[in-house]
Length: 203
Image (cartoon, helix red, strand yellow):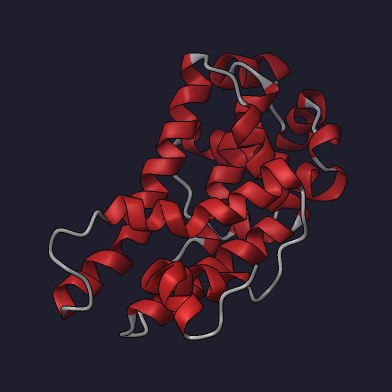
């Protein structure tokens, strides 16, 4: 079990078993990657039967998604600098760092490739709803400060912020430029025409 997992507060037996399995899955993912994640290995490390894992998660992919969902809680903390631009850049920068890691890119691709069975759909929806609820605080605070109009579509702002990063990981498989968060945010806040007029637009 990882040190991070050992520090979490124990609950009942079911919660302890879940924690042990998720920690074991994360350890295997970090060591061997997505292709090396075998339910038998996870079960052995967690001290449970394989059948218990399949009964609770259904598939290897569902287990992987929930384990990485759990880990995503760590990087997904929302910055609060007092500035909309700085908050958006900081948040996108954390996402970029996560997606640039082997675990982060694995998670993104696994989430995109997950099926439509009820367990996978529930895990996927839970992930995105949690992401939007948390990151949306950046936009809601900016509205309260008067940096954005009251009618601003909170979810659309976040979708426009993170979509280019996920696009590169999932579709073009390009490396993520560390300057990309700042470019995305400035285009989002000022628009391409405004950037072009200031001489900063790129072809």
